[in-house]
Image (cartoon, rainbow over all chains, first blue to last red):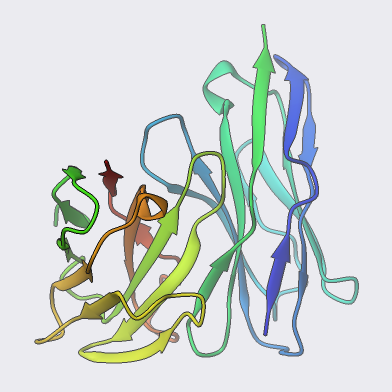
Length: 113
Length: 116
């Protein structure tokens, strides 16, 4: 069975600085998808960024980018120019070949003004 | 399309009562997922569907939990004989299957259950 591990329960970053959230996963599959989701306090879960495992190029969405290391089974999220609105829980997620989606326990990100 | 809709948004029930939650997915999505989330934790997988077929149910889920998606559209999650430990946010999500473009799941706003 696949697992997703986020080893940083909480992180803080100064506004306008850069922060990296870590995620590792365990799988024997070669074809899968990885995601980072954001959940602001008391609000809906929304997608931040996605990565297809067959693509070597790291995904980028504006200030958000990933470092996908397939051999190491690592999928970190970098947030550049952090903004107050980035404060939230961030979840790493894995979608397997049967379309089951599982999540890590999350990292709570604080933005310091 | 208005996205994934869940009803009710909040439910307070007495221990031992049965509760049922509803999820309406995005109309063209044939994958539907249920998760349970407690405060400060990640979504815990409960079950998921392909159309009306339930593909997997978490082994951690007791027999008090059951989910259906009778016509491959909306889904219901029922909890029988609720316990205080069932208090949580119940999240529903839907997605397209592989090979049809957008691969991420879209979430509803959740149903917050409080068992007193």
